[in-house]
Length: 251
Image (cartoon, rainbow, N blue to C red; front, side):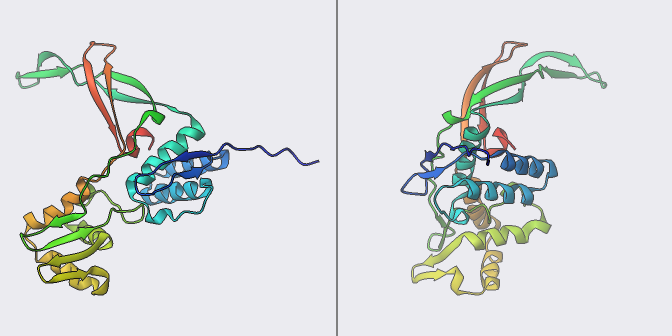
């Protein structure tokens, strides 16, 4: 006689980029194992692929998540894990309140922080969806600009991690993947209609200040965030804390 099947609850979530809510089920023990193995690997590509696999497994209706902006993926996964593992997340913040002055080895006065590790518990279902009010149009000069798309799970890499010369090509790759068209007074020039090498040459012809305007778009991308007040149990200093991005919540 076969074992009984367990009916799973179905939840709905409104994402910023879609007109209708998506429906999903909680992930199962087998999917939790996949996530734990990916986290233990410490490899970013493995973690991202596992997150994508789990989301695809749990969506009730077919959806191409490769086209979703990265901030929608973060918000969806945050809620998915909350419904699967638990709504409460406990994390820790170090108290940076200055509690005194002491002499260092050179005899100079230095500030001493409390450094108490404060346990903080939040309900992740209280986290609001990110606000996507960032304009996709970036003016490079007074007359020339570029229109960008929000990066996806496949194309996104934090700009802060790609500031070295050897990673410059990765920055160009992400801009190319997210660029829709360049425009000026005479018209629009769609990026996918020209060789990639031509677009890279266009980027290389910019001044650093002009190039920073483009990378600034990615630095200002919407993120899931949560603000809270918390009092240090050791020194009683009241902190205004912010959790931001998926890594602050889980990974």
